[in-house]
Amino acid sequence: MGDQIGRAEEFEKKAEKKLSGWGLFGSKYEDAADLFDKAANSFKLAKSYVKSEGMEFGDDSGGDKAGSTYVKLANCHLKLESKHEAAQAYVDAAHCYKKTSANEAISCLELAEIAELYETEQNIEQAIVYFEKAADFFQNEEVTTSANQCKQKVAQFAAQLEQYQKSIEIYEEIARQSLNNNLLKYGVKGHLLNAGICQLCKADAVAINNALERYQELDPTFSGTREYRFIADIAAAVDEEDVVKFTDVVKEFDSMTPLDSWKTTLLLRVKEKLKAKELEEDDLT
Image: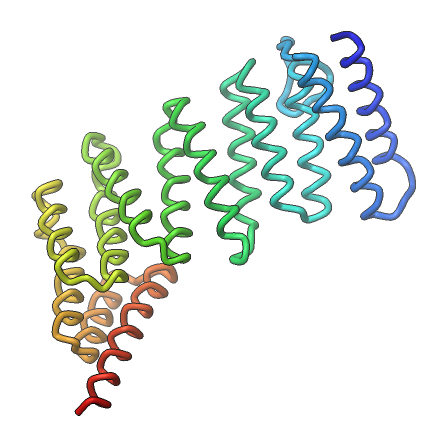
């Protein structure tokens, strides 16, 4: 164990020296990242999970050396704009900190979440992976609100990738949980609206109607909301293959409750499918 700690401290010193010395911007941080990675792994192998009093998050003066070194590694990756690698380093730090401090594990996961928000649309698959990990950590720590925020991100990204069933299951699960919490009850209709829009994207009229019945059983007040009426009217327009009616329903709802870009994108997909069907039938007549 002593040898591993000695090796780790040596790697860490070399990394710090790289950062403080001269060198090209990119290569300096790349070299330091490589050394911090070796240091963190050596600390982890040495099971250096010792908590010291008064240690600040990310401080290298004591405490969980593996965790704090992974945070330094993440900072190097952020300097290099390697968001995916930074997020992985924060998650690794969280695993280490979990041995000594739940609060610091949560802090790391918040940083992982922030790192993932920088992910471009081309990296949605990776964003899903990390938000799922973050949601699991928060759930284990019983930080329900943060867990649900991460789950909602997963649902949004999954819908963008046309994984509608996955999104539906997440939104329905959050709605069910929220019904039992007085502070979260107000958000139920929004979660069910999102689930309903994903149902519309699947273009299955029977499934949409079944979902609306299920949502009414889940929350008897839902059938009296504008959100319920909106989904039902859109479903009717889809069933009737009426593009004009579809457009009018969306415009009316948007004038009262502005639709965000995520909902607009999904509804445009539904409209495009509807228009394609209409053109197909025109060609046949």
